[in-house]
Length: 238
Image (cartoon, rainbow, N blue to C red; front, side, top):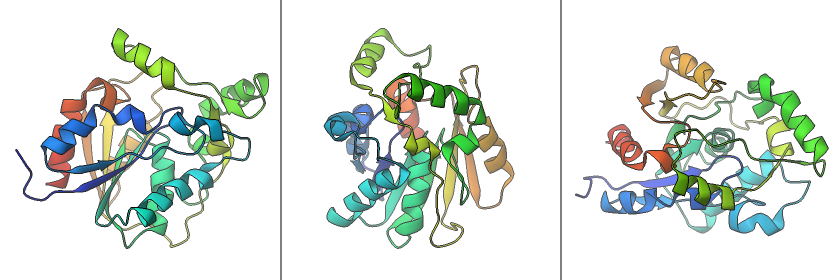
């Protein structure tokens, strides 16, 4: 059944991942009458051949801003997943006239001047050691959640690639001051031992300007719980 008000969802995907990881969501979005745009950042997914040590958070913000410009996207529901929360915050800052609302899906919510590693001190040393022990500039993927099916695990493992560490180290620079557009936080409650995103659940539950939601899923519901995620997204944009 088509929604009364079709939306354009633009995804800022997570680290090590790419647009392909949102494959299960496309038919669900289409059936609901929405458009789902899932671009891939430079150096990942089908653009893995472009990987190089200079890629950083600004590169990935520019990737998504260019999709908005060249596809002439407007009235965007911007959806940032995981690391994509860093990217989405930068995109929303610079495309304020195009983005109508912002949804963070188990994602980092940076303030001006913060990097992902500032928000995840636990991972800082480990990620820097992993990068140093490899080619010096890339971090191998984190393990997938334990409730990922065998078929999905095979699908993901074959396609996830190392991530340039500069993306995690670079501090976000907001150009237009604090974001005031409507924003929602979705917290995935099936947490792995390191509850990386609990801090943002706590913050967005109590901070003015947020709507707070939970989903009974692990960190990537676009993979493990697409129907539940679709139902929740429909509720948020209704």
